[in-house]
Structure formats: structure tokens, C-alpha cells
Image (cartoon, rainbow, N blue to C red):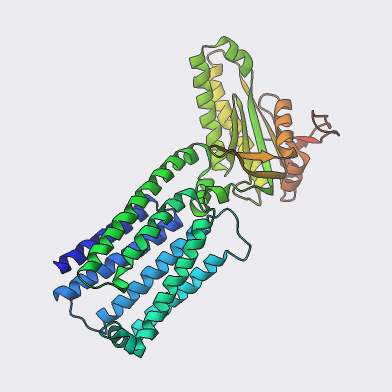
Length: 430
């Protein structure tokens, strides 16, 4: 019965590892958890094989597999905690203290594994009989237990930290499950497989809740943010990815010419149909160029290139995005023009330093961008004629440095509302 219990525990752990990596393959935290439970599953199956006699206990083979799997499971678990720590909203540039503790804990666990590979016979003797009277016990047990203590200290720090909400769900589950999952260090049969199985179920409950939160978040990310931003949120957490900071980026604003007159005379269903086609075409252009849509406001769309994902070539990407917008927009509006509805698309591009980050209350956050380039892009968009793209001097200067001067034609300086002096404006040539 005990052998069967170890088989069940091992298979459940392997199944959890497979579930974590298949349900969330792009998440570094889920991959680390998958590695941890896979190692736990291997330990359970090895224990069952040895106890049943199916696998003879040979210190040269089985004796080395146990310390390898044990050390690997500890290292993977600590790596998950390190990844969770990286989702904290703020930490110093040298890395959070708990992350350094976890690296030390990983080193101690690895030391336990190396010692077990070199002297598997001593490792076996260390955990049999009167343990405290054996010097080998301290050589093998101290690194393992000390790594667990350091991990516990780090978990205590993580509980107080402002880590990602979804990861905190799994972290709370770990607090309850960890003593049960580690019961093999201080309990004997027949309790070990029972307590381990209970620990797996406790953590599985937290993991299910984690995926519910991630699923709700993913619906938002897929609709409004680029794939690059979605990946950043998975790796660093929503709060950390949207933390307020100042960055140089490019802003692209576009809206429809003739939309107001059309919306006043057309049926609401026609207006919604046009907007849906328009949003889909513009949204595709934004995503392809690595941008993030900040605002939908009627027929107006404001996109950022350079935040939350930073790009050294943000100006070039923004102009490419504007040209793609015009091309895609012309295809959509051409179909409506065949129905007698005359619409056009104007686009403005501006670059400079902007403060970006999450703003809002406790229940609702919005990714905001504040700075002169945002206003300038909107003013240039309003100034642009149907089919025209206007760019400011900074955007052009950034691109000209890379040999793109032929793409622009300079216009007469213009006074724009909200700006104290005339702005030099360029048209973007297709």
C-alpha cells in the first residue's frame, strides 16, 4: 500500500508539473514551478520503485538519482520565488535582499546534490538510524535545512512585498502547502505520502485560482496591449510593468475625417460597424509595430511606441506604424466610399520624453502617458488632412540620424494650440 501511495503522489506531482507548463508556457514562474513538481514526481516514483523491489537500490545509480532530484526540486522552487520577487513593484538596482538569500539557498541545495553524487553511500548513512551521532548527517543535512530556512525568510519578506496579485495567490497556497510537501524531511512512513498528497492538493487549489486571475487578465491584455507587453506582464507582474517612470518614446494619434457628419446621419448600427472595422485595422498596425493603444475615443486612437516596452528605434517604428495605419485605413474606408460615404484618415506623430504608468483608484487602473509629445501628436493629427501624416521635428531628427531624410518633406512652421512657439512640421512620404 505504501508503494502504491508513493506512485500516486509521484504521478500527481508529474501531472501538476505538466499542467503548469502547458497552461502557462510563456511564464517563467510557471516553468519553474513545473520543474519543481516534476522533480517531486520523480522522487515519488523512484521511492516507489525502490520500495517495491522493481529497482534495486544501487548507491552508484539510485543512490545518486535521489540527491540529484532532491537538489533540483529545491533549486526549482527557489527559482520560482526569485521570479515572483521580480514582480514586486519596486526594489533597489542591486536586486532585492530576498533574491540574494534565495541564490544562496540555491547554492546550498546544489551543494547537497553534489555531495550526494560524490558520496551517495555517506548520504544514505546520514539519514538512517541515530542521525545526530553521525558526522555525515551534518555534512548533508545542514546545507539542505539551511537552504530551507533562508527560503522561509525570503517567503516572509515576499508576503509583505507588493508582488503581482496573481503570484501572491500561489504564494499564499505555498505557505500552507510547504510544510506538507517537505514532510519527508522529518516524518516517516506511512505518513509521508499522505501529507505530501495533501500538500499537493492544497497548492493545486491556489494554482487553479491563479489561472482564473490570469485568464481574466489575459482577456484584457490580448484586446488592448501588444504581445510584447503581455509577455512583460507575465514576467514582471502587472504593477511592475506599469510602474510610473519617465521615458523617451513616440506617440501616434489618428482619427477619421468626416466621421462627425457621418455619425449624425447614419444608423447607430452602421456607425458601430464602421468603428469595429476601423479599430481592427488600426489595432493590427499598432500590434505589428510593437506599440500599445492608450486610448480609444470615438474615431480617435492614441498609441504609444516605447512604453511599456522600450525601443531604441521608437521613432522609426512610429512612422512605420503611421504608414501602415494609412494603408489599412484606406482599405477599410474604400469599402465605405463605394457606398457613398466619404471618409479619410489623418495621422500625427511626435516624439520626446513622457511620464508613463498606471493611474487610478483601488479598483480600476488605466495606463496613462503625460507629456508634451502626447499633446503635440494630437494637435498634428487634428491638423493633418485626409490621407496625410504629419510628424514633429524630433521624430524626423531621430530618423534622419539613421539615413531616413528622404521620407519627409518640411512644411512652414505652424502655431498649435497649447504651444508657445511655432512648431516645425513635416509630412511623411509613403
